[in-house]
Image 1 (cartoon, rainbow, N blue to C red):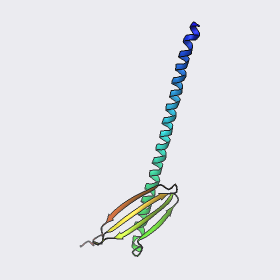
Image 2: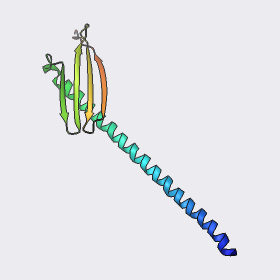
Image 3: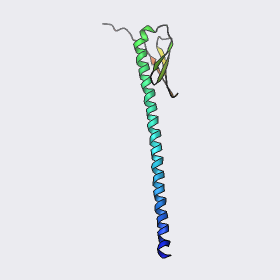
Image 4: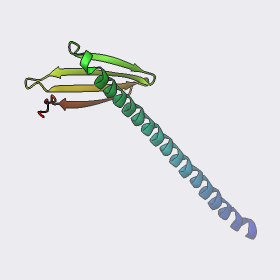
Amino acid sequence: MGEKGTIMPVLLIVCFLFASLVFVQTVIFVNEKQSVSKEEQVLQLEWLLRNGEQRWREEKGMLSEKQNQMYRFPDGYVTWEQVQLFDESIHLTLTAVTTDGHERTRSYYLEPQKAKKE
């Protein structure tokens, strides 16, 4: 019983350490995967907001009567709402929604551009 009695506890310790290492690596992998997924979601929303803002800027001369609109993109859509304030500035709110249903909103206060005197 001398050799078998000392090999079994050592073997159990090695198995326990190996199982612990596999568990820790699995937890790290799952956390990294969730982190990458979150980062991808943030990038999609940012892409939608920037493209929505760019389209609004390109079309704002034609949109004087429109106060809100939706732009559709492959990864989702952007809605915007424009409110004219008393001092002729504009409050613009852009809301991006991905195809997965994640949402992000951004607001701007835009002042009217003054004509430059030469």
